[in-house]
Amino acid sequence: MVISADAVTFYVSEQDKPTDLTGGSFKAVVQTGAGIKMYSLTVAGNTLKALLAAALPAGSKVVLTGKDGHGHTLQA
Image 1 (cartoon, rainbow, N blue to C red):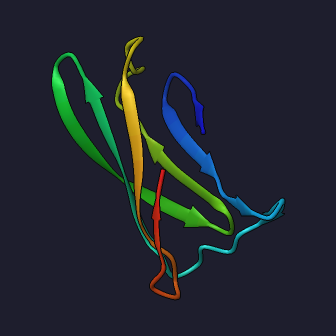
Image 2: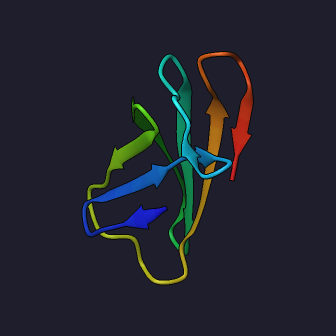
């Protein structure tokens, strides 16, 4: 997981190889002192990304959840 000022990006691999997540549906659940927000993630190969309206404050908690194109559940 990489968090920048305007995005949260996940790079997913399995057994040290990129995992193809094409056809999947994922979201990031972000908890801050102001509450909880959900962001839909776009899929590009093994990369999941959501644009943020503002940088996340220190101490934010981020959870990845969804299913890949084969229907397998992924949570982190």
